[in-house]
Amino acid sequence: MAQSKIVDQYGRPIQYDKLTEELAAARTTGIRQVWHQSVASGLTPGRLAAILQAAAEGSAHDYLTLAEEMEERDLHYASVLGTRKLAVSGLAIRVEAASDDAEDVRRADQLKEIVESPEFGELQADLTDAMGKGYAVSEIMWDRSGKTWNPSRFEPRDQRFFQFDRDTGRELRLLDEADMVNGIALTPYKFIVHLPRIRSGLPIRGGLARLAAVGYMCKAWTWKDWMGFADIFGMPMRVGRYGPGASKDDINTLMSAVANLGSDAAAVIPDSMRIDFTQAANVTGAGDFFKGLAEWWDKQISKAVVGQTMSTDDGSSQAQATIHNEVRLDLLQADAKAESNTLNRYFVRPWCELNFAPGRPYPRLIIDVPKPENTKILIEALKELVPLGLKAEQSVIRDKLNIPAPAAGADLLGIAAPVAAPVLAQATNSEQVPKKPIAIPDIVDNQVQTLERTAGTYLDDMVDQVKELLDSVSSLEEFRDRLIETYPTMTTNQLADAMADGMMAASLAGRNDILRGL
Image (cartoon, rainbow, N blue to C red):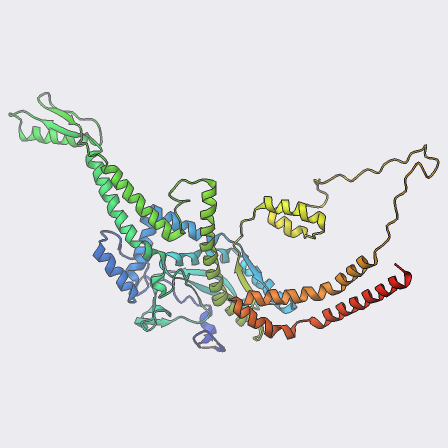
């Protein structure tokens, strides 16, 4: 079997022959089957506690089945969890080159072609299943028919086909007949394992399904009791009466008629019999009790999954919705960052190492979360600042306002050009037509403009270096220490020379003013 000198995070070499094989497919017989018995039916507190404890100890099959059934049976849980999943899967993906070098740009362009494929969009959606269950796995089906290794498709795999190792509870292993107790190690560069990092600790304890399981069970009981209450007290009681001489067949006929009245609203009985309708007992507030309990559990599940209840359970004003949208934005940013890290670690790195020579940094894949813009404030600021000299790039403003660039030859909106005033034919001397005063250039303004043009490029380079350093650190203290280390490498010599030339020119200009007596 062909192996490479390239190893994964566990030090295992790549096995090229296995990259094109389907290693985690379901089977009709064996340990990886697609058919599983229900766990949610008849769920009790004792049974739920046993399921959660077994999952924490490494046997998560029943817990994963319960997590799947919760999405199928609880409409509210399916709604809020689906909202959080779709919020991430609908975001655009941006690819950044490692640098402006031509080779790094070429690699980023090739990666962008893969990211824009429909298969990659499906992968992005499949990985969001980790939010409920704690982790999600997709198998990369590599294609080597061309000159490069490229994914032909991404196959989502059932989480029940895997288990975490018994020693650390963090390394995911594939269930296989070769080792039915501990499973086998995942083949390097074949699987994308997404851990959403919703909470710290063991990955299997981090899924939202574990958090919502108690609420699901209690709500299921409430729903069952509520429907039983509606069945008993929601309809009037039917009482059939028969005379002392009624036979057994007559009684059976009356019983059938009374039962059919509940669904058919029609019955045929002899003259000697009658059916009376008795009003159901007045159980004041009982229906509201069941309803209130079910709604309370819905709110708790909403808080756990989307972080608030305003947009899912409670009516709200626009101002209240805006405040709660900001809370959801924090969750969305965290989910997008976690999935970006997963894709960079389990796909971008393998793809680069399979196709390119080592030694260069990898391009970065970023799931963009658009930040809400107050366009009114932006427009007001531009109206005030642009006349004062602020220079703003049109493409940036168009992106913020979501206005596309105009097509060639399109009819454009804009301010009409001023019409030149006609020359007066009667003007016969210079006194009738006022002359525009000649502007005398100011030497100080000329020097400032010259210094801006000369030093601007070098100053922009220094600012870019500081920005890159700020993006790479995690605290202000680290930024302070790194800035001291980075300063000697900055392009300060050219800036110092430009400033020295400007000072010399200003000194000479001042001497010239003195000699001229200004």
